[in-house]
Image 1 (cartoon, protein in one colour):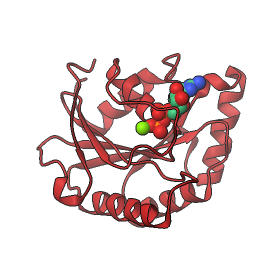
Image 2 (cartoon, protein in one colour):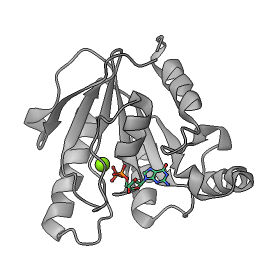
Image 3 (cartoon, protein in one colour):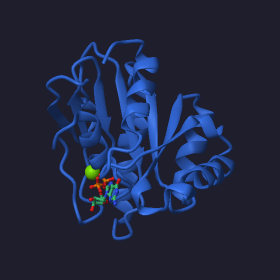
Image 4 (spheres, protein in one colour):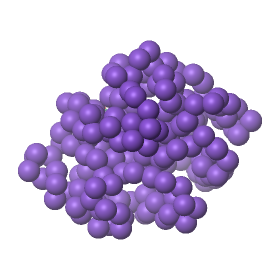
Length: 193
Ligand SMILES: Nc1nc2c(ncn2[C@@H]2O[C@H](COP(=O)(O)OP(=O)(O)O)[C@@H](O)[C@H]2O)c(=O)[nH]1
Ligand SMILES: [Mg+2]
């Protein structure tokens, strides 16, 4: 159980990064993949703002989940983003990933229906190269038939060259995969939730 989750703050630049003792789990993925909905799923309440309009979150948002911090990284791949915005995104996310000493794991979100995009691959390659531990979350599992979930997870695993066991399929709408995700977080942080 996650007790009393709260929004802590947003950061627009490294000087705003959260200084706290708790470990952090960061949620990354393209704009509209379901990051905010996923955070709300874990929190069990409407904590993060979800939007119909992609590309609205340009900030890093921190949520205190009691025993750890869930960090919502700004989404990428928003078609209407300008070159300047993309550069700013890169700088902000890269400084976070490289500097945050409390970062315990990146949860890389992908839409279960689609193969990873070029930008998804770039991020995964970056995480491999910099040896930042990550797990993959395949979102919107309610959008495909239950029988298609396993095969899709295998396909995504093959695309990203990760093990099938490193991917959890979730649905923020039905709660599918919530338990498994919480148990992953428990294992990562070695804590009770
Ligand atoms: N069917 C379905 N829709 C979802 C799910 N998660 C998110 N969405 C929808 O996808 C859109 C983007 O979600 P949001 O959480 O704001 O994505 P973000 O931009 O990555 O934070 C919203 O319209 C959500 O309602 C899911 O598990 N199932
Ligand atoms: Mg969001």
